[in-house]
Image (cartoon, rainbow, N blue to C red; front, side):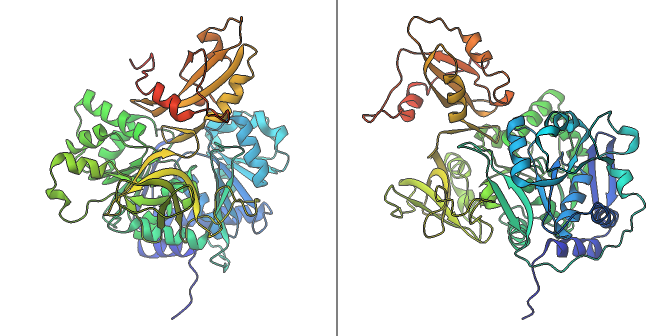
Length: 540
């Protein structure tokens, strides 16, 4: 057999030749509905690669992006990776200090940035000395006023460049992209994806029991391209030649998402639960229908069955998925097995509420505290571990990170789960006390440490409490210092400027003492039990 390397370049070349007329539609700040073909897109990718070479980049250089889901970001995915560079996507929702840390840790050489995020970089420019220059992803007419040095306009940068580029022959194990974890238990950690891992992951998510992608589909990834490569869809969709619809800065706008789905004939969409709550709310208010939409994939947080039920009324099937930055990210996917359609409604909902079965390529097991493998009986629960060809073996710049990988090479996911006899996995808890809100992780440790900085706080704990929109939101539980006054508003405002606004606790409860183990450790389990019926004031 021929030993052809598995390269992202091959996806680009295949799509350009075999699906030249398939469409890419995207929303940008400077164009409410940009439209072009795969052939036109990949011609511009060649221009961008030539422009990058003119800037003097070298093999293996990291190229940072702070950008929404649009056609220019897609062009970067291919131009950067296929020309032997590494595309480093950065989550702009992170706190500024985290973004500063990530850019410096990755040693990014150039930053591509949407106009909206230029002020963010202006505030960081003196703290990221390794960055040589900035490219604003717009045209000359929409360039923002800024004092950033060595600044280029994206459209001007690539204008006049040749569409032809001599794409290098690469090792399939060469790095192609970099994404950092949210840093919930310390500093964010970089996960470096290879060409091989990305192509294999793309094959997997296109399978019928996963995204079931076809040239006849129109796909809307509402999951951001700055987070785990939009679940691999910027690669898997061109691989099959489907139409790709990119929402740009409208990702959180339910009405705009509905209009895109209806106007572009979207058949498959993917995103976190909060996106679909906004869309369903708009559909209820407007009375609109979405006749083209057949499937919605939901991950990033547990999907309420109410969302599944509401979509079902529109003739749309919802599929649960689970994964991590370390897993590229898809690890499990929920489709019903033959005969399960004959289960009664209650039993069907029980199955569909689970995170699903392992994708081919992912080995999965649950273990007890002594690392003994537990049975797949739907009752035993233990620490979830995975391994496979698109699971990271370590972190960028961190050799042998033992906290997340065991001696046999399994990735310790940090989740606690059960697996039933049919192979359906369900997350039941987390081994580390992070909070998952709207698909994003929030560190309870960071919030607790911040709270403890207040002079009137003797002890603090943060737990995740159920929220109807965000799945979970942080609740701060505080023991005051004796004889000191501390009011709710003062405590909550203490977090201003210390953590990202969306990470702030939604409320604070004052107690006389916190539960501890015999060795003095805080009992989060007991605390969650104590506040399991708690309702935030804004949702009560």
